[in-house]
Length: 287
Image (cartoon, rainbow, N blue to C red; front, side, top):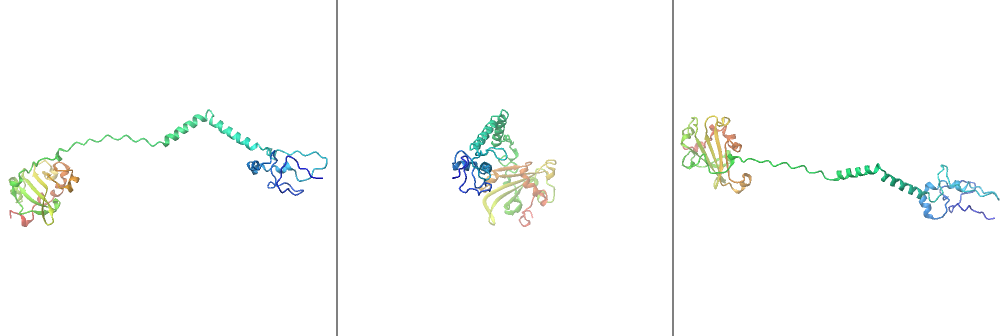
């Protein structure tokens, strides 16, 4: 007599040996269809109850009623229903939909989205500070030479141009007015009104070039004008600086005390050769 198989059980090509319990690797789960795609979708988790559905391997006695395949595993979960995975998927989708439409979660999600958008935006630029209005220094405005004008008619105390390291290594010549000439050529104190002018030329090797340099001016003022600098007034006048200096200076210059621009002068004259600067001894016209 041929053996009959239970219609709800589908086994693999290799049937478990008689008397042996069914193996998960050799038995598929009972299902209404035998599609291979269904077996793959259920996966290993749904194959575990197959032994209970198939039985323990013993033959049913002749005439005994057929045993109904169990649809629950040891944990009580439905294992053989082919639609169980889809039910789980539908339930998960329903839970996600409920979470996105929950009356509390919807406003919270909106707030989180707004916060994320705010963080993604670049920070607003800080308001630019108002430009600082600088008041022009009247003591640096260019104009005709004032103190020392007409110096060419004064006494020239240098025999010829000489290089002055303290005046940019330019060639200079020195002129003194009548008020200060006696003090300049002696050790006497300079009276107020004494003026000393040094005109300069840019260098062309070891001789003066045709390019005029700045005119440097000193004037002795009344006591109290500038006690920290011996009451001397200083000025630098340069009518036509060469192109290499225009970018640095901004054009023609006329700097005069008490502008800090003339610090170039008093840094040396405060403590240098009686504060006025004398030509080399062999070029002094009064000796």
